Length: 291
Ligand code: PEP
Image 1 (spheres, rainbow, N blue to C red):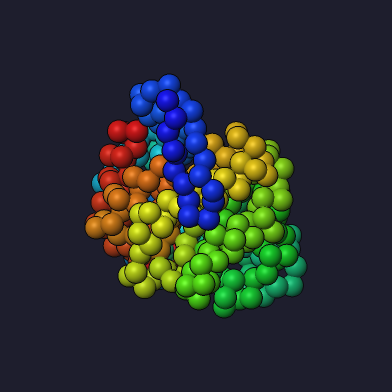
Image 2 (cartoon, rainbow, N blue to C red):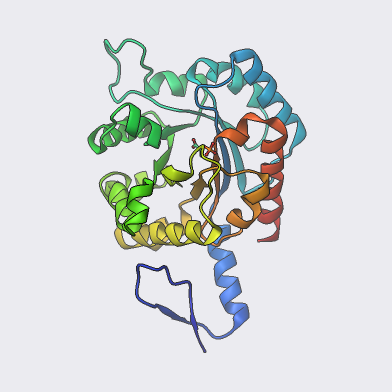
């Protein structure tokens, strides 16, 4: 029997031949299970070391993160050592920097290097966030240099992509986002790509309270995974975690996280409220248990 699998709006229909509904379910669950489900909190330029320690402490005390899942705090760079201490020994919690400079070291007053981040014990770094692209004019060339520097220091990269509203209104969001990726992380070889997590964050949904619908998120995540598959093969596509970001909160998380190609969330505002972030982790853990 033939089933029409998921068809994103920018692609022609694809059919996948499977013998039964159960086999189709099995394939979907197996593929999704290969990927780590991640809930990451981007604190941006909020909190102090003291309040950040309290926030992270409340979260780690309240939840046990199940196997196959990971919770990441991305506090300001000044807090990394302190927050790393909070998560130390807590299974499946980790810390990320929000940025690094692309140079190894040098006269870059105010910047931090990949080596400095790695030395705090943090395991990840965000690269390509739309706020960095927009306010700090980070081009693809700069992002590529940052990604390489992060990987050289053993850091994993949460690479952000996403389109502005004007692009979505013109219906060009798929090609825009795929271009952002082909110019950057899709240039990596499959071995290096294993250390990449992708975060799709439509700019019009960041900090606006306006979320992409679960269908809009799924469509884009499918398109991203498909682009990974074409460039880097099945293994890379089936393994890469693709997070959704943009006004995720407890009220909308379940419907978004449930989507077959959504492997968690990059959360801004709601990650600053311990209760909300704990709830998001619980929603993710619950879904992860059922998949
Ligand atoms: C973000 O900044 O990465 C983000 C998704 O923010 P918010 O959840 O507040 O939209």
